[in-house]
Amino acid sequence: MIKPITHHDRKKLFSLLKQTGVFNKGEITVAMEIVDLVLAKNDNEDYQTFSYYDTENQFMGYICFGPIPMTDLRYDLYWIAVDRQARGKGVAAELVEFMEKQVARQRGGKIYVDTSSTPLYGAARGFYEKQGYSRLCVLDDFYRKGDSKIIFMKDIDASK
Image (cartoon, rainbow, N blue to C red):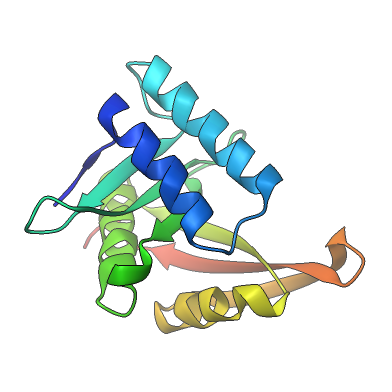
C-alpha cells in the first residue's frame, strides 16, 4: 500500500535512509528536512512524499517527488529508498509507477532524476534505465572531484 507519509513514518524513514548504506550524512539531513517540512504542512504540493507498506503492514520504502519551481509541468524525483529486505521485489518499481501516475493526473510532463556517478549509485542508474528513463547528460565533478551528476528524464503522457 502506498500512502502519504505521516508523523508515525518519520522515525522509520530516518532508519531506512541510514540502513541503505547509500546516502551520506548530508544527504540524510536534507531528506529529513524535507520530510519535516512535509509533515509540518497540510499542503504537500512542493514535495509529494509517500510511504510504501507491504501486505503485513511493514514499512518498506518511500518516494518524494514534486514540481520543479519556475517550470511548466516538469517534475523532480527527489528521493526514493527501499528497505534492504524488499530489494529486488518490485517495491521501487511500484513507487516509481505510482509517481508517474500521479504526475500524469497532474497533466503529465517530464520527470527528471539526478544521481551520482559513483559505483555506490550504479544499481540506481541501472534501475532508472530499466524504468524507461533516458540518460540526458553528465555534469563532470559536480558533487565533488570524481563524483559527477547524471541526469535522467522520462516523458509522462497525461492521457494514460
